[in-house]
Length: 89
Image (cartoon, rainbow, N blue to C red; front, side, top):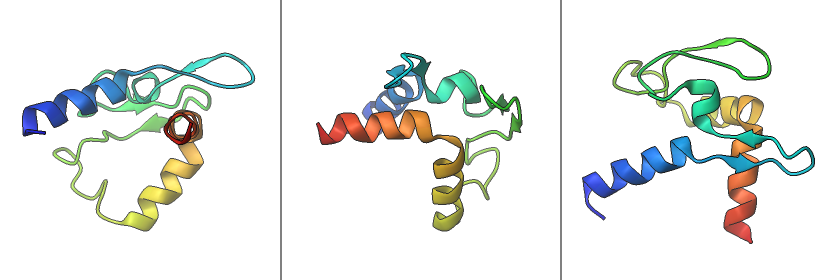
């Protein structure tokens, strides 16, 4: 896959809405982080502000694998859980 294809796949995943088991709510990365990873977001449930996800804006964002796992596990459980369950199926 070329770079353009990876960008398109990333954008589709960012905006893809997953149906959350149990309550039927739709979840996606864009719901909390907004339409563009370069912009700040706001946690859908907690209302807490979120710094931009884009490494081009915040170089520290994806530099420590332990921090990445910690924050994704703590704050992105719905989309990630749904995604991994769909991949395993």
